[in-house]
Length: 207
Length: 207
DNA sequence: CTATAACTGGACTATGAAGTCCAACATCGA
DNA sequence: TCGATGTTGGACTTCATAGTCCAGTTATAG
Image (cartoon, rainbow over all chains, first blue to last red; front, side):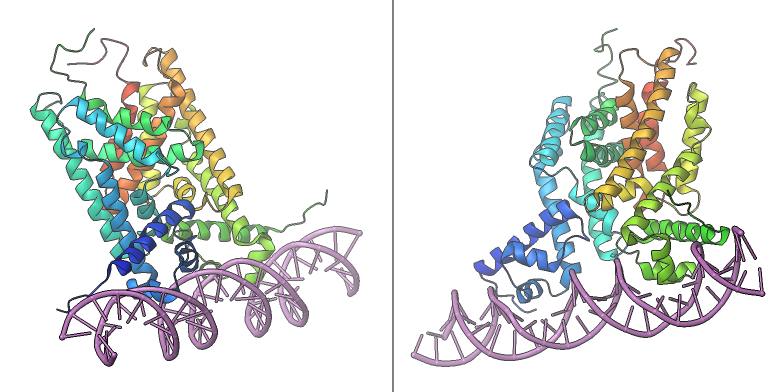
């Protein structure tokens, strides 16, 4: 095992490349992102790109996917690990919408990569699938907590509800993107979140 | 106005190109579809591609989008123009799922193109947006019919419900694709369709 | 039958993007 | 101070793909 000596300067450059690439992918798609445009945006050279990502563009894409996934998860904290009460679900929803629409993002880095590159790069597909799985598990855990607290029908499948929520996020973004409006995403999300406050501790619901 | 003389043979060739391109896009993405692979799959030559689509790849993509959109709409008929009863909604749902999962499609041609190419080709984006709009309108009309029949809460916004349904379709397919299973799409769809039979003519619902 | 135009084949060019290579510079440990 | 290693710049090669061109073939009109 070789100890990889790496300086702070190198780490910073590497990170700069990853983040700039992520932005370009979201803005212009994976096909519209070339090593030259990344090079230009990061004031780097070809040799640096291949120095830090010997696997070339494919490896860079995978690293970007990992980074974006970690950012996406971080943006949902600490709510995502809570999700035991309706309030925490609401807070999570807010944080998520803010993340997507916060500053000209308008798309899910993970979902975007999933639909664009999964079929061409099996390794990348693996990274994406893993992110989706852990995301789904976090949501399912939240649903289980709500279930235990009696807010959700006991017979409901938590994983199924989690998948429906994820689908609402992905699909909601597809509909929001061309309109440049948040309401389709929010509407889809609220619809998917419906089962979580329908059976509200029984008689709580008026009417 | 020049009368475009065009023979049956030419029309057939043109159509063959469009359909083969559509399949390739769905299978390998827009970036993985090249004029050469299309040429090989259709037993045609470069000159034919540019003879029928002088605008090159971009024009071909737009024609494919139109064709796929018309196919998608046709696959939902006659249910899509009905949608006045819960039975017709169910039939529509069936037809749609069959269309997507019927023979190795596993993705929405429209949604796929929307996320892949909208940002690079404004014209294509227009074609996609128009398809989505008419689709949304058809669904919204159905919701209005259900509303008029008293099956849906009068205060609900039909367009909003239609958008949520479309989001469920798009997102559901995203979740179904890697799993190669129909249930995520079906679950998302059913969740979005929920408001349509919640207020079922009152006492009709057994249990 | 013949002329015109649609249709087809495939070689050719131009371009852009991925990836290679080597020399120069910076930094760290001894 | 002096190597060794990490870091950077940029020219160069290779290759795939979009798009061009023209000659040859088939069909249609008169």
